[in-house]
Image (cartoon, rainbow, N blue to C red; front, side, top):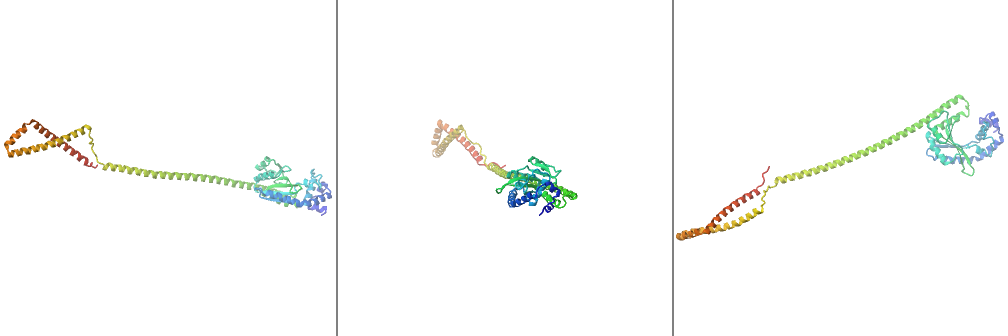
Length: 392
């Protein structure tokens, strides 16, 4: 490819070529060396992609190794814009000056996830340059504040791109490789891909196309915001559901406790009823016992009364003894009357004249009468003891 074809294919004007002020031999040498490095760069890119994909917040990873024509185009444009960095570019140092020969793009779903990816990258490599967060003019909010809080240089991108750029150094083999990692949302990736495809080949300076691409850029930003809102909404709903579930569980536990207490009360009531029934039965037994009991009068005897009864019993025995004697005397008197009235009369007179006998006879009669009275009282007492109490 000759120079004219090269400039036309890469949309480089003659004016820019003149400003770049670089000889073609240098460009040819750089291109030749770079083509030799491409296999090694591919390995470095694949290694980076594998490591980055392990981050749980990464949705997907894309990588590429810069095309040789694009390497030369970048050198020309940087020199044409007056970049001091590329002022002495050569085949020996171009791989150190061009930091995006290997480019890895990390995509995530929600804007706030950038911070987790940011921490993952910084824990894996040490950036060799400051981290730059590109925003569109007019962007603001919590995400922009989080860029500043995490030591990112916030810059407005002239084309409206939004992404965070890291320049890191890796060394899968003996040669060190500089790589650029770009982190952005899927919506930003979609817009940038469409913008790059449409703007650069044919309508780079067309104002109408640029206007609608700007509207598209805003729509992609709104889509990012909506995605974040929906994600936060779902998180809030889940949190509310967890709270509701916890409250429901707590309520179920309280209900179970109430049911257990109710069962305990029911068991205690049943037990109390059983106790009350036993008490009622006991009272009934006592009443029945009282109803069927025999009232026994108090016939306890004092010591004096007991001695009196013993004395009375002894006297009664004597009375009975003397009563037999009296009966014998009476029969003797009858016999005497029958056989010999004279003898009887004299015997009777003799008996009656016997003062001692007369006193004894009177004493016998008195004791006998007292005995009969005591026997009569004892009989009445015995009858009362045996007689059951009248029913109520």
